[in-house]
Image (cartoon, rainbow, N blue to C red; front, side, top):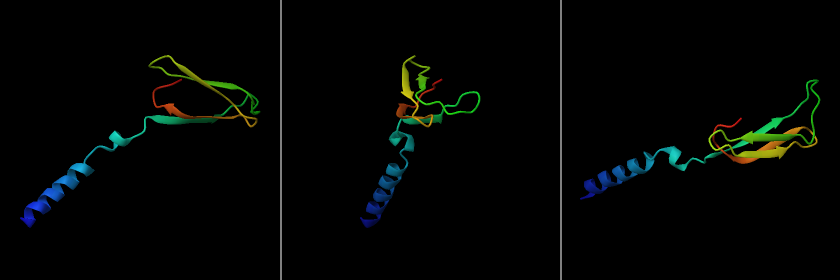
Length: 80
């Protein structure tokens, strides 16, 4: 009786641990960067646009005073 419980417990644990991690993965990414002009100077208030290659939808963000931009939680799909 106890041996059967041990096998059942071991099999249950194996099944729970064998679930692919991708089942729990988040499907999003953050885009960050720095915008500069050809001379290397930082560009404040520039618009950065990411285009989803699968749907054609766009998402834009503006750079801050330091030329940095960040777009958190963007869908994780091919973009340009």
